[in-house]
Length: 298
Ligand code: G1P
Image 1 (cartoon, rainbow, N blue to C red):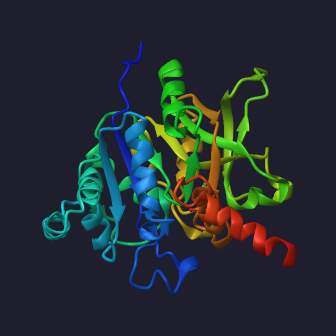
Image 2 (image 1 turned 90 degrees about the horizontal axis):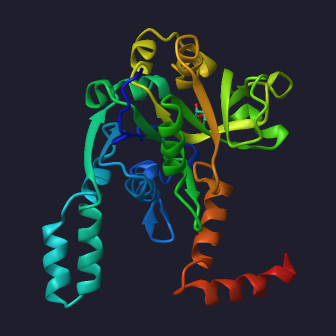
């Protein structure tokens, strides 16, 4: 009987160049681009914390200092805000500094997502752990955050889980696509997998279930990542290592509830900005009125 372990740690890879958002990302990490007034990485850390994660490791590169500053205490700003009586703001910036225990490690070369995750090996040790990708912001207002849903599923099966949702047929080549076992005829959200392929051509995709930036993995993944050969795009792919994990352990997909925004894409980012601002009490009325005002002319 496998020893049941709690998922306490999460890894957030944030060492990408953010090429799709140049020139904004020339000096600013893409994870710091705000949706309304909150940097995207803060939504991700928030989801991790709300899912029960205690320790977060962010994989960075040399250009990411301001992300560390964001999650740190800022005495100077705090003093200035206090002096001008802005106590609500003081409370807000302190809350960010106390969200979780956040650690950082640098990925020294951009060799792909699998390689970035391998940088977390000694931090994770011999425990199951979560991965949250910063380009996928998921909102599930009525229920559990996406990662919490995966962790709950992990507790049931004690095996690795990848979070998926159905995407349009012409979108499959952008994602890791899973193949549920044909013997798994259950209609539920949790499915046992027998294959997984990174960015397949539309005609080769085994399903339309795409991995959307949430994973709970067993630590055995690290041994596989250590000798993983480059795959799609010449990069060391996490998907390829998870596929190999299936030969020694069960791996499941969980079709999580929630609205997912691809904030690594300009249009996805704009959609998130509109939806999040409509959801804010202080902005809803003016944003809604503005959309109505311009809509007839579009
Ligand atoms: C990565 C993963 C892919 C996953 C996607 C989700 O791809 O490699 O399997 O489906 O994130 O956003 P990327 O978007 O970094 O190319």
